[in-house]
Image (tube, rainbow over the protein chains, first blue to last red):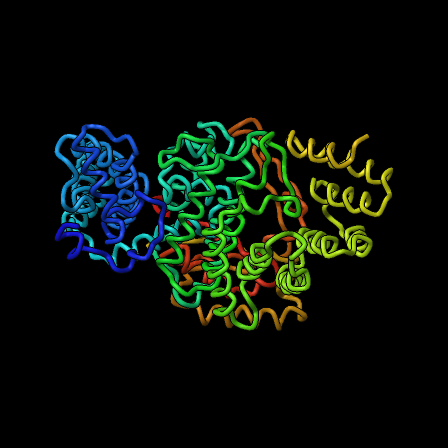
Length: 462
Length: 116
């Protein structure tokens, strides 16, 4: 570890438990990663992507700061992108500088000024004001400010005045650093559509006057909820957008080479970790991260070798990632402990997921606990999907008849695959095979996923 | 300083009717509380007093005048405020204090500075 690592270390972020390579120099425990980056740079290659990963982590922080300085998302993105490209070239030749973040900040600031002088469209007064702000800012941003900058950026990208799909796209692009093409691939839209969506979102931020700020104490609960919802949408998007026919990759490479879905879910988890780190002790954020970790811990068990869906009860639990699950359980407990009388929705979803993670096999599940948590969840969110999920838990606990009675009273899920698939399964368990078959046909008509259709075909052979 | 218009969409009401007195009182309270940022505004007569004006065939063409609102909707434009706020968040905070926010919906729109 170098002297800068010790002296310039950033205590606030040192506990971020990010995948290797993401947190290179601010966290003493990751000092080895920087050494690895230096080593590969010396060899003139970057085989493990260590340098790229270091750059990626720093780049996000520098972007957050440069946006504050310029007040212009697009300008800051362009400047930081150019600075990152030049960093990669330079560092490959000369090695990683002792303070890569300051290096990158300085390069980005110079680039902002270049870009501003070149574009010419902006009123002179505004241009000069930005240049002045940029010139005055130190290259080494104080740790507390880096933290606040990151929070400001998160709250801006997840502002409820932006459409939900715009929040998701902005988060992936701006917070996670995915290129427009990568975001487009991950969300299954064309690159042109994604570019338009991002441009619209940037314009709304600028024209409607969405400020780059952390909400006040009184606004905070609502805004935190909005952030959590967006990050969770990102997470589920990661699953939904992955080709349902391809089994998930066992490992996610540091460089995004694999299918985008799994890495989008990983990005969501990364954001969740960052949020918990930036705002420790917030039950909604702990619950969010716990829910994602617990669901993600089952990733490898969710599909078999043929790419077929394996339902929770049938999953090989030895494939569950016990480290992720343990971390999730601990966070879930903390989220529940930290909750007021009215717990956060995500704390409750985490508690439900924790009940499953704590069971050695499906038969050992504490269904009373699961059902009790579903009752709490229903109280917070009496939506048809929650009622359906509770009914499924009721069936697993050994009462498919009661579950079916509940399911048959649910309204508003006629177009929902899992509603009909669950009905089919319950009818089958009750020996009503003909009706089960009809429900299965309805379900099959509601999905494009071959894996979901195979699941039905397996359970309801004609 | 950026400006916003807060458009109130509610059930179509006649603000001059006696049964609106209590609600009008709520609006007056909002007006006092938000005095520092309100730069203008008005309550509107009901949509049945609305007149649509259209010129056909481009500028200088025939003026076509019609009765009634442009479109029948459940919630009608019943008033507006011009607010001078530093940010959308501030405008949202004020908009949330307009009675229409709980009796209907308030649409907050930034105004284009050069045209003001």
